[in-house]
Length: 252
Image (cartoon, rainbow, N blue to C red; front, side, top):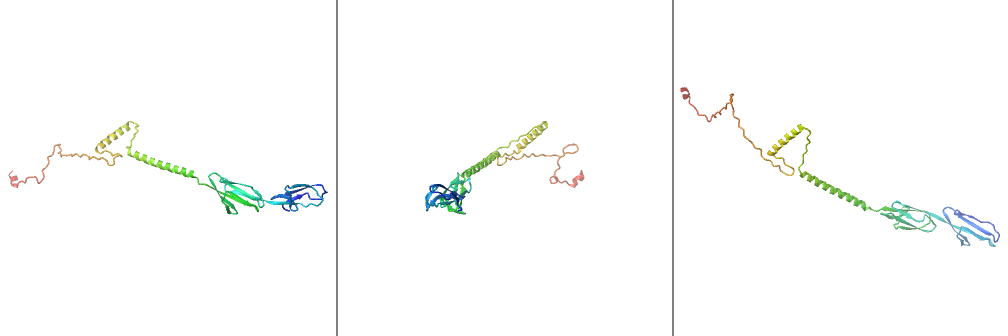
């Protein structure tokens, strides 16, 4: 009685046209009209001529169950199939994976019931099915990272080689001359450095050991002089003087 409503029952004359109608309620579907356990029509609106006897008709309904299927991630995959089904009906659902994604399995009541892409369900009530998908490993990311790492290694090696090459070269010196005084100072410094380099050359970066020459030493002798500017002779040492007798002194 909760499956639907009926219209058309009543008293009719023999031969009169009779029309009966069965209207299903939500969640049910009309199946057929039965008379004496025999199906006489599958249309919910049935017409016939009244016979010379009473007529008893039975309208059969069956419940319609809802199939609620969802995807774990719509970007990884989708599910196709019917959203409703009749009692004891066999319903097929299919999981379609997106590019670079894979299907894992079907889950009903928190239990994995199948890992095949197609799932067959015999309905005996409403059911909720969850399709699990996953993203496959993207090798393109590894290739890009490897390329970046290789580029970094090559760049570091090239920079190190360039620095070593520059260190082996002599370092140039540039001077900006703004006026005459700066020119004079620069010339004096250049002349002083040139004279110093003749005695002690400055080593460059190419030579591991500096080429150092000994500094020449010149001996300077200073002679004493008196107040007139005359050179004072050197007095002999006591050991070199000839001893004199006191008698000789007295005689003189």
